[in-house]
Image 1 (cartoon, rainbow, N blue to C red):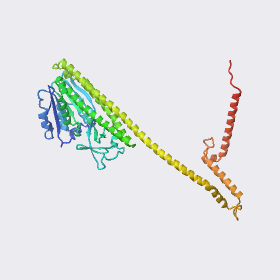
Image 2: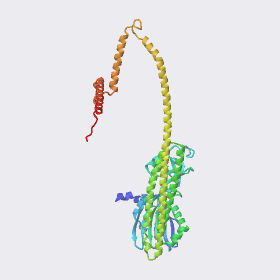
Image 3: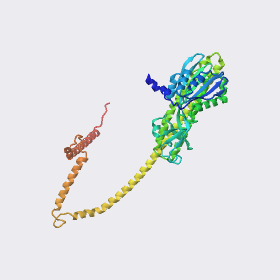
Image 4: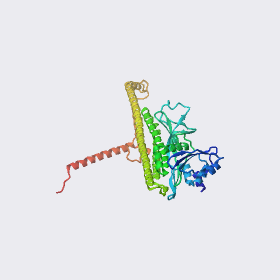
Length: 508
């Protein structure tokens, strides 16, 4: 049990949190007319945590609030305990959120009263990065086939080290990309952890946000609260909220936010693919294939996350709200809300399908770029082989010239050797004769040929003849092999002659 608690990391979140940072809650309320109202943010420090419980959490909610959205930033241990106790939240929601485990489930279904739903989809954000390096600036440095952001990337007050090794090993690591315009961006894995308490009187949506602050472009608590509030002020959503009492439509706006983030991330990745295509045309560095394989690995990971996000949308669409069966809701409102929710979820699913098709198209373009890299490298190798062949031809011509010169001087060298021999027929006072020289030369020549043929030739059919004596007896094996060959050819010729003389006859 203790090991499970440790692995869930809830105990660490309760005890080992940064006490110097205050927890901030951003509040957005939706009234019965479908209007969104932004409340004052709530800051909870170590000294004010008791006041947060007694004054804010236990206070009665204002009249006319249909849905309250709480965006929790830098959730501390006491705030986690108090929110969990106040809203009776299952610990599994916090453990899955802290560990970034995608989850979706429905619990505590109360007919005509409400239920609880939790979703934890993961998605990718495209955020601006500022590279800082002491080397030559990335804009002026030539492309060398390596990651164009092989340096320290600063995102707000935090930094990430984008190295090729880390990207190859972990596809969930931040991906450093670069557009054709030279803009450096980072694709970061983000989390949308939402616990939805649907109630016939007043619903509550609690969203947990990781501690990593991802600038104003990421899904911080303040940023998401602003996006939800602005979405509620649009004509389309305001008209929908005013006509339907179902608070599930507020949750749908959260999903649209994640979808927009996906769209921006894949658009950034598309620009990076275009950038790589331009670099492939200008260079044939084989090292570019490493970066292309990194992008393809992330593509496969994005495909699985998009499929999981589609399952989350399907879960929201199929789990109906029990509170909509209450007597205060008319049949017309119930049917219209059901149809509108299905329409919104279908729109989300169609957009997810569009993103999947775009991702597949990018994958095909990556394959095309990789083929172009291999073709460029093969062409360069062919050119190098051509130059080596030309050099070999030149060397062969030079060797021929040397051979011709040797042949010209060979007779003169032979005569000089002959006249330098110590024999009676050539030199006065010589001690040997020409017959002695010829006899010694022939014996030495035959011995040399014998030894060379014994150790460099295979004239024996017996594979076991590997001893020195067997090899020295090569004339015997060669003669035996020659005789067998002659006998076999004679037998084959005789058999052919007989078949021609007596052709095959057929019986009637």
